[in-house]
Image (cartoon, rainbow, N blue to C red; front, side):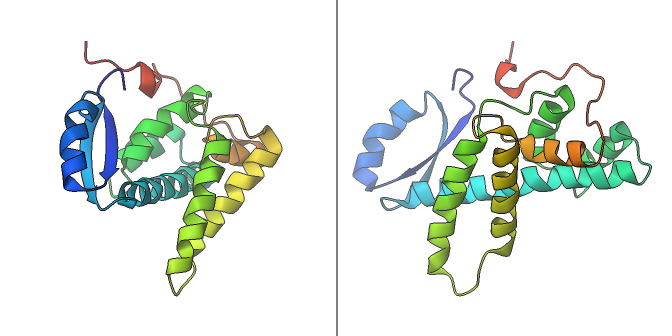
Length: 180
């Protein structure tokens, strides 16, 4: 928020949004999502995708390293190919630094995944990727506690496979990045 880099999802009557959006824009970009409640749905969908990717990036690191690929080579390839994403660039450094991004806890991830699972009832088919991610986040919370950073889903794989995802570099925490 201090860097005006937040993306806010706003749902509600246009007249209400017209009044509040100028204030919200002080925090970052505001996306108008539709009627009341849709902003929350959009937030849950974006977090759902983030959590699935956060869980899978650790799997990718583990798979590559266990098969002889050095982590710097693997990360470079991920970031310069179809594997690239905001999560890879934002969360990868938090894994490499070993702090696993404490700014968003496993407890918050599990809360949002639970809400996504509630929304799932509007579909005919189950969300199997979401269910799998929910399971690995629950496992990470059982192992490390609910108040640790969300990227402990990757730490599980480091610990279970005797790997280290530490990588030399000046890995600045994403919340410490400034435009200065």
